[in-house]
Structure formats: structure tokens, C-alpha cells
Length: 250
Image 1 (spheres, rainbow, N blue to C red):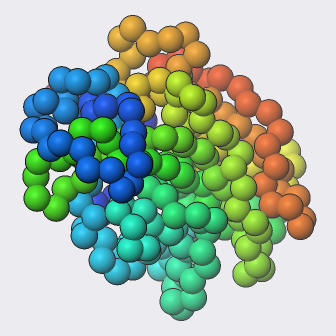
Image 2 (image 1 turned 180 degrees about the horizontal axis):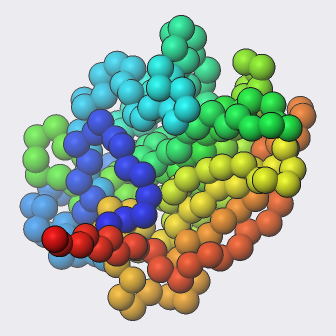
Image 3 (image 1 turned 135 degrees about the horizontal axis):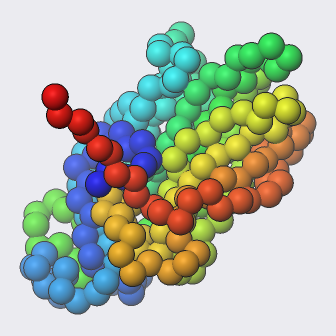
């Protein structure tokens, strides 16, 4: 099975089934092995190397503008980055309003008759804290997800809108970006497809035993001048969180 979302991350990210409980950043918990961390709790955990991104690092290219890219910028805080858009000339625009772990993103230039050329970016803003069970591997951090949100921004004529959350994950589910696009009927309306995931594990999706509310959703939003993206409505489009790719044999 293949997860239906795009995943392009230059980090050595290994999702763990680590503890959901978190504790203050200045706490000094007792180290444990990775096997112990896996055995103690069901979800929300991942491990990361804080030094993997030491300078501006490309996260993904932009569909329709191959010279442009989404870029992660380190902040000096463990596994927290800013998300930027860099165009082909090197000009940069900061999309994130606060540092986070930006795992999943979709960026594209939309051009069609009757619509101004629009650069659209949507990403999952993943916030996290130190996991209750620390890593026993030197230089590796065990973290626990505390919240997720789907944030979007758009640019027209070189001017970027405000970045807003159009989907906010719940206390018991995360929102993972799949792709974004334009509404065919209204030049100021766009959409983002995303996965509602109660396991908090975007790289280990499995539909077995899931709550009925899990699945793939589509949220429409309007680009409002002076306000940025404003959510309109959300529709469930699939009960599945994973897609099966069938390869034929000759």
C-alpha cells in the first residue's frame, strides 16, 4: 500500500510509536531504548536529528515552476523550522508564522483562462514537544506531536497573501496535506485535499480498525484580499486513508 500524499523531506525522519505524554523542554527524563519507547505507547511519536538541517534546505519543488522551491530554514530549536518559498531568482518569502515540523506540502503555479496566475502553497504545520521517553541514540531526539494544522497561502503578481490555517487538527486526529488546486467555477476559490488520521502516523497509514471519521477530505477556501485564505466548506471524499497501487504484469 502507498500513502496517497506527497512526501519529500530531506530529514532522516523515523516515525515511532512513542509516548503521547510530553513534558517540559527542561526536564531530564531517564533514557530508554527505542524498543522500550515503541512498547510503551501507541502513537504521536517520531524521532529526528536536530542537526540534519543546518542551513536553508530544499523541501520540494513547485509544480509548474521547476526553478522555484519550498525551503526549510533551521531556527536553532530542536527539529523546528520555518517554511519559505524561494523563486528562481533567489527571492524568498517566509510562509510560516511560527516554527514547526513541516513534513508534507504541496506547491504549484495555477494558470488558466479567466484566472490570474496564482502560486498556491498548502502544508501541514506539525507542532511537537519532547517525548516522555527520550532516545538512547546520540544526537537523536524523540518527539511527540502536540497539534497539526493545514496552512495555505497564495501569491498573485508577486504579492503574497497572509498564511492562514484552513484546517485545524483535533485533539484525537491529525490533518496531513495531500494536494491543492483551484475551483473551476470561481477564480478566487481553491481547495486542499487532506487525510484525517487518528493514528498520528503519516508514513504508516493502515485502514484496519479506524474510526468512521478517518479518511480523505476536501476543504474549499476563498482567497480574500487583506485576509488571505478563508475556509468555506469541507467534504469527505473517501473512507480510505491509503490507496492500493496495482501493477500489471505482462
